[in-house]
Image (spheres, rainbow, N blue to C red):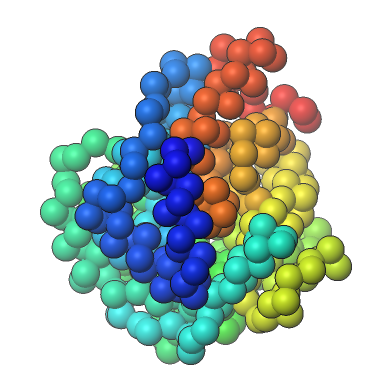
Amino acid sequence: MSGIAKFGTKALHAFPPEMAHGLSLKALKAGLVPVPPLVPDPVLHTTLAGLALPNPVGLAAGYDKNGEVIDPLLRLGFGFVECGAVTPRPQAGNPKPRVFRLSADRAVINRMGFNNAGLVALKARLSARLGRPGIVGVNLGANKDSDDRAADYVTSLTALEGLADFFTVNISSPNTPGLRALQSKAALDDLLARVMTAKAAAPVFLKVAPDLKEEDLADIAASVIEHRLDALIVSNTTIERPESLISPDRAEGGGLSGRPLFERSAALLRAFAQTLGGKVPLVGVGGIEDAETAYAKIRAGATAVQLYSALVYKGPGLVAEINRGLAERLKADGFASVSAAVGSEL
């Protein structure tokens, strides 16, 4: 990471987390974030649900909720960017403060609550960038006060069809009361049947929580196969609090992400990889902070990976750094491509 980027990342920590997030978006919009030198390496080219990616390192949903800085993010070296979560109607989210840095643990707790400008605003931004390069997905959520949450996903999917390369059905945020209940077998089957009936050309992914029981895992895997989902994202933030946490804000409510989530999310990824047996591609998320952790997710069964929280601590140069390290590791282990390494530890 360049000296300017390091200074900028450190300077943002002088502000409350949510304010720092807003300032980072403004800096990207203004072109103030240094673009790291990135020489695309052919060994990193891969495909995810039929989408050709220049590299397997993606940005997880939650950072660019309203699709404001998609192109600057792609220029940082991400192989794909997921914006959102979007809900049909705008909503303010939960009361502030709702984001907490756990610096000593290299973690973040958030209870944002799907705050976003709504479907109309995101549709306008995605329409304006039509024809530009880069793989862009949209994370779909439900309004907190919705009478029919499954209908919310269908509404957004239908409205944005043709404007995004993939859609993610997010039923795993812990910050909308009752949302995770959609992971139960009957509710999930109803939701996926309605979403997949509404689907047109773009692939549809499902994002699950890391706090699943063994029986939940089997049910979700069965539903994903039955409804022919295009990929499974493993996983969202956790409501668990490992005893290892030492930061003052460790007891705050919300979803925990970052370094402490790595082992839990990687174990769930391996379990889904073994249960699905290659029938559905997996995206590994949770605790990725360097090339080593990204490579570990790939070897545990992930076709591609996503990160977010590590950017809080390591800054925008992290993306290029991970890509360089991934290419080195693949070549050192004799893999000619990312796909050859997927699930290799299994």
